[in-house]
Image 1 (tube, rainbow, N blue to C red):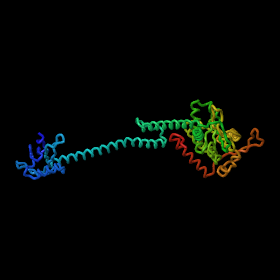
Image 2 (cartoon, helix red, strand yellow):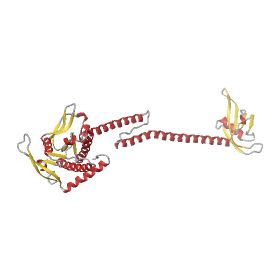
Image 3 (cartoon, rainbow, N blue to C red):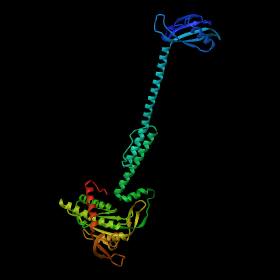
Length: 415
């Protein structure tokens, strides 16, 4: 049965002297000298195989074969020799198939390794790319971005931390936005930048203050429904707020039908006096335009009185530890309020001290108005009635006026 194997061409058993005792299939014949020579090499330990050419007795194709000869031992005694003959071409084919199988398996392993490496690389790099993209989104102010992917590895923890950070930044942005509705943006920034040190304190500064209120407000309120009155006030206050922001000022407070604006605080401004007067003229221009719009639909016009003053004042957080507000106080502030009180409808009145400032003289056109007496001051205070800015600067007022109207039509005052 063994000699009938497709790869085995013959088998034989030989005695110690090389006599063939039993054989089947291809065999070295005794007349072939290779037989004795091959056995002699095995006996001498020089080789255990020989290669020769075999042709079947049936006249078949000649082929190269290989015979392996090994001693048969029993209890360390050599009893004879066993010969097995194989087809060399079959062995070569088997070897080739084995090499091909090894090469194929190697290439498959390499391909699988590359595919797995790519898949693992993508699994690692994709979240990193997403984190980079998310950082750009957050950096642009889109704090609502969140990772929805859930992972149980280190990248998952990093994504969760990123979401928590974005949530914190969103909350801070919302707080800042809410504060900006109750405080001027500059004050809101100051509060947010010093959350650990919000205290009652103040410092002496040089600044300007503007007071404005509606002429004849009592009679207006008596003939106007409450809802209409609130809407009207909010409309005019919105325009005043835009004019204030356009000229680097802040809204200190709204007081019924009046408003108080501050220039030069909390952020210093060397041209605070000029900006305060420019704001007053821009307010005057916006109010006139709004009145024309109201009259076109049958509503009454509204006139404001404006008083502006400049000088030294105390600026800081005023009130109690439980409730405080950023504001300015002092004689300069009181005089601005008094100037507003003596002004007629549609007028802007400033003090002589303000009109003589370097950043005002040569840029503001004003005429002498009247002198007023203040309690505690022996000499009367001279005042001036503002008419306009000089030609070059008046063009800036018109440019600001048109910009505010464009922003209003777009849905808000974006300055």
